Length: 314
Image (cartoon, rainbow, N blue to C red; front, top):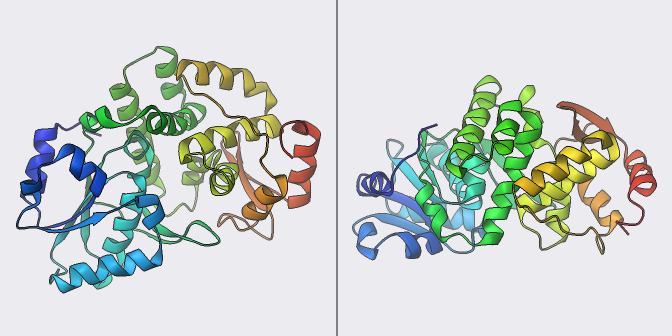
């Protein structure tokens, strides 16, 4: 995965007529005239905009502006923006080409890569979606300069996930390499996994490590996606592979990730949400344990949590 400059991203904007961009990113990183004479849809509060109502609004906007099947949609923003915009690209006129410029650490290492696109349902995250690979992902680390600590920590959560999946990435964290090297290593790793298993019919499923618990925690709390994944990873290790908790502590310290408390998180709410996870099979919940997909019943998960985390989760 190549790293691009901001000037190269500006050239992309000039050369594309149909653009979806996070309004906050446009305000921070571009001039108003950069988007003049373009058909631009500005997304406000992307995570809250990831729904079918806004999906329809965006499709109508571009159809009103005569987008064709031969046009390419340029998407600029974080993971929620690329999820929503990629879903538009996958469905409008039965699918058009798209390119994406991820602007958060989370989207650079994970969310914008792999072609998983979609919107949230009231029943859960990303339950309505598609697989639609972008033609190109343009990573420009200059966008990270305007992220706050909370957003950076969210991206670190996905980097932590990769450290448990790939020995090379784990070694890079222990070597304390630059963010740019870590970003490239994570993006390259995910890209390789996706090429081998685009529609998650095999090994790609390991990229969901920590996400079964993580998505539930994210849904019922105010924690970001990446931090929720960190909490999900810790829960998975505690229940299934406690011998790896020492490594978890070492890596979170090296990445300077603050792991929130689980107090005041309802076990019943977590279990209720996980029961609707799209990876479930035969009413059993899917988890990644030691890089393999395993299934546990709700009763088994509840028993494990009660036995191992009784003081932490209500």
